Length: 284
Image 1 (cartoon, rainbow, N blue to C red):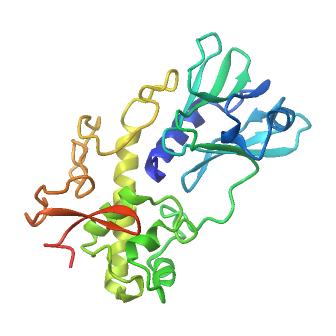
Image 2: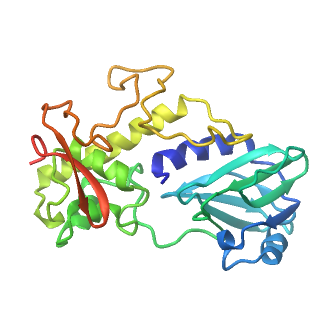
């Protein structure tokens, strides 16, 4: 499932092409994706609106609009597990898994979603925790979120009301980076461990965003319409000393392989119903 870095990279690419484009129509081809909003509601609300920017909140894309009466309006989208957003020539054959289509003259905005776990709706996104890449997200904020919780620290990080945008992949990676066991009770972390975890969260998210921004994304037909860090087959255009040229997860999806830090074997367990990867050698 796309997490904060994937959505942030896509946000930047969409922001390059959408502002100034006017929505002429809204067609809903998969009603599940827009519930509870119906096609007539979306068409009436969006028709005549102009995209003014593309923002992100957690794993959600947020689209500020200037409505046809000049008022401010909002649309949001979540990619679910298999969602892709295309901005393409309106004359192209429509993708067979298109779920919602916004006509924009000679262009169109399309959410393609084979499994229909994505969502598109009106308004903004509520109920999310702080943004991990914002300056306001400090080690003290993280400490307050962990304090008093008996949940495993990894499960706590996955709670979107606690921290917006971090999912299973980046929680695994951040905990390894911070040398903390995923099953540790959140409240058991001391101040030094919280500081390490805070730094690790921002480090792994920031690395993925930097790599994603250096790679091409095809918004026309969606074959490469979403960057995923960790595929291990693509190199960043300009690696730095602190940024490995080849994408690679440290622990995620590497069960049985050696840990690059200590040489121990990476193991896979289930924690809170989610696959969890860790190195028992260096995550104490």
